[in-house]
Amino acid sequence: MVDTDPRRSIPRTDHLLALPEVIAAGESRSQATIKAIISEAQSAARAGDIPVAEVAPTVIRNVTTRSASSLTPVLNATGIIVHTNLGRAPLSAAAKQAVAEASGYVDVEMDLQTGKRSKRGTGAKQALLRACPRAEDALVVNNGAAALLLAVTALRGDNVLADNPASEIIISRGELIEIGAGFRLPDLMATTGSRLREVGMTNRTHLDDYAQAITGQTASLLKVHTSNFRVEGFTSSVEIAQLRELADEHGLPLIADLGSGLFEPVPALPDEPDIASALAAGADVVIVSGDKLLGGPQAGLILGRSDAVQRIAKHPLARAMRTDKLTLAAIEATVANTENPVQEALHIDVDRLQERTERFAELASGVVVAHDGRVGGGGAPGVPLPGWAVELPEYFAAELRKGDPAIVARVHQGRCLIDLRCVPEVEDQRIVDAIARIRGADLVDIEPGDDSRLLDRLKHHLGDGDEDSSEQ
Ligand SMILES: *Cc1c(COP(=O)(O)O)cnc(C)c1O
Image (cartoon, rainbow, N blue to C red):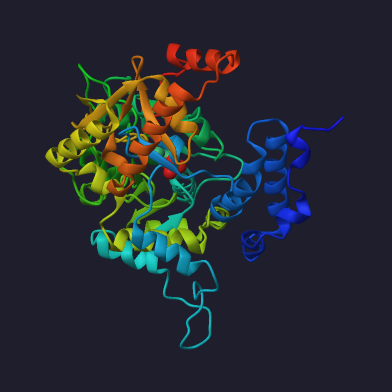
């Protein structure tokens, strides 16, 4: 009997290892990684998932183009700008270049003139102070949550006895937020040994509520921007300027956690606080995230009065929250060059977006619908960013997500919505092509009698898409 099973002719490992492209890839990939890619393609052929003839091309494609980490680059077609599940802010060209340049040896802590340890402070700090002249000093740590913990811990009174941690932090009940993934501010604060003294009501807090709560135990006043929700109706809260007066009366530090990282007010986002205004109103230090509206890498920025920032910088915990050279490089480049994808998506020309969406819809045989983008990522909750999307049947969303390139569209009310706001325009055609491939596969892919494929496709048509819940 002749064995006709084509799986017998799957290319052998030594044959694949000898392909010129695979040898070339050995310069940047380890042999273990390359062998894993080979074995994966062989297994796929053995399982009948790819034809035997596709093994070598698949191996070549994967060793040359697959990213060196397991993170898959994604085109964000959701219209949500700071998408937490997609890594928040995409970096600007300047920040990417800065990261690449900082990835080798760099003079991050050396003065090249003297060869000694540098005392000038980081370029990131200098850039922050130029961007925000009101700040006397600045410090970069790993993220906003770290910055907050560090600030409240370092700014506790010096007179606190070790066995009597008299460190109550006064905060409005309306500002006790959960910042995402189940992390709650009060729990975070509890880890510092501080106690939160909650004042006021969920919807209304008055200056007098703060004043009544101040005792010898009080360590600081904390104002937290309710970045991911909005309380509407019968509400009132106390402004930073009012809290400043109270803080001065009692000699207390005033910390303002702003969240999203605007240097100046943005008219389109009237409820988003900005660093300059918060400092002008009298906050001793403000805290923001580097990867929200600032449009940079994950980081926590602390800006404010030099005595307060210095105290924070010298606290032992600061060492545990220290950023690396890559973050410092990306923050500096982001702050010094205000153009970045987050700002572009926020301030997109809506007429231009409409034209682009119409052309896209024509190529992709979809329907143009009005669609609001969102800031997302715990910023400007409920503020719509008017725009457009292309509507397709819901099952497209799952196919697009699993494709190459991976495209994440919005699934909403049984439809797949493609919002181009956060998609670089040069990528439009790749999305059109992906849609065409899905359409083509729809019609021709299923061999007569291939019931499992047919069932699978039917399942898609009936919709297995889950409503996206990833805005925060
Ligand atoms: C997002 C946010 C944080 C947490 O910042 P990360 O950079 O995500 O750690 C803290 N406070 C507020 C008000 C926020 O919006």
